[in-house]
Amino acid sequence: MNNEIEIVIEEPVEIESLEVVLDAVDEECPEFDDNLAEFMTENELQTLATELMSELDADISSRKDWVDMYVKGLEVLGMKYEERTEPWNGACGVFSGAGLFRDVWAQGEDEDEACYPEGD
Image (cartoon, rainbow, N blue to C red):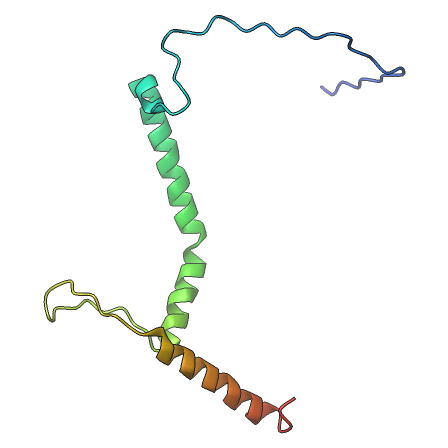
């Protein structure tokens, strides 16, 4: 069974006037900067939260391969995340990017010399 409908217009249709009628606005209609959650029912909020969490999980899982490759790349460069206990639990280890930049730049220069004797 074919449910397609074909519409053929042989002559252009001109609309001289168009009138749009809007229903009366509810007194509790939100303003532009209102918190829309305050105008939703608990059921609508729950549905929205479920859909949002589902989309978030799908987004995270779709990037899993990229994140794994990124982490492996950082490990190859010698940067590793470590849980620190000194000077206190959860202390942050700060690494300077200058040394990493220098090492990567030097590696690139060495490869140019190793692969292209003329430096071209």
